[in-house]
Image 1 (spheres, helix red, strand yellow):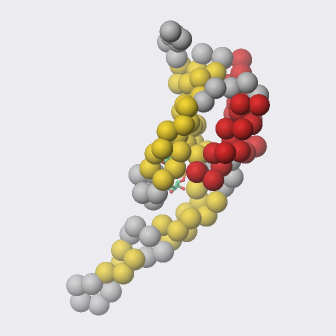
Image 2 (cartoon, rainbow, N blue to C red):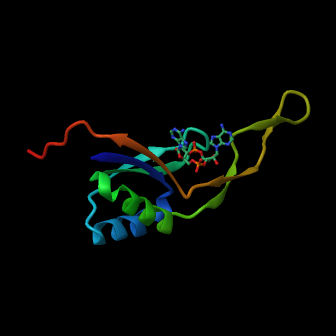
Length: 108
Ligand code: 2BA
């Protein structure tokens, strides 16, 4: 068994959960925050049999879209001692997936 630790944009979550459930996968949804943009995203824990990993990845690929977001964290100097926010565009997504071996799975 593998655990797909899957980080996706909030907008893609309803569609992704729906298609995962339709195809017999189980998932747990956690609220998370990206370290770079410091905005909310969603982490899904998806436990899957080894022979279904590619199927789950295909559904993630089909559902999760790349989007441009403003990065307003960095600041640039502006006059003496003051700073203004700098707006950069970054491409976020489709999805970040960590595929981890599960040593043992128990449902009690
Ligand atoms: P964030 O950390 O908020 O990153 C959002 C997007 O900003 C990233 O999209 C990437 O395009 C850009 N970015 C991230 N770090 C950067 C940096 N040091 N310099 C320049 N640009 C940077 P994605 O790569 O699609 O990542 C989406 C979210 O997935 C991330 O949100 C983070 O929550 C998670 N993530 C991505 N890579 C990760 C990793 N290696 N470990 C843990 N979480 C990760």
